[in-house]
Length: 155
Image (cartoon, rainbow, N blue to C red; front, top):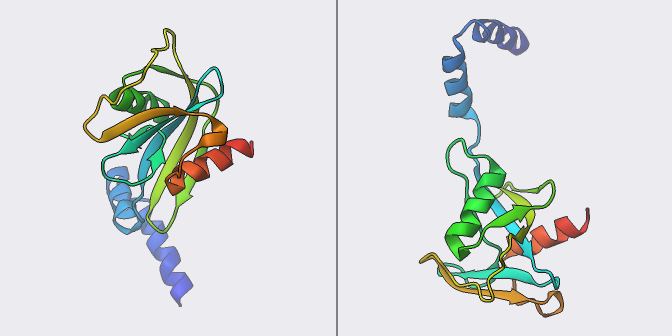
């Protein structure tokens, strides 16, 4: 009985206008926020990390995508906003999904485009500190930053 009712509803659903169908799906589907993060490596292999004002550990520059924004553009925009440098995205991203908090992070690997400044400073009020760290001397990382490094290394 339930299967027959379900099939009848699906037949009716396909005749609805696309806008109505999209709204119905969005009403019942779980919402996820999507962010872009950029793992920036220097010529010497050091990683550029930021310490945010609202989180205790270090992480990579990044943030939420704006509506209809491409993830690679969001990663470059966030880096420019947070640390004031222009980055070149190097390869395809990896995706991290956090079901418990309904968040998706798209992680890119990048390099600072020349000319590379001698010192990188915060360019956003949300960033307290920016520093290059050699890989063998990394500080305690936010869990998503540590997971991003592992996922990039596994490729």
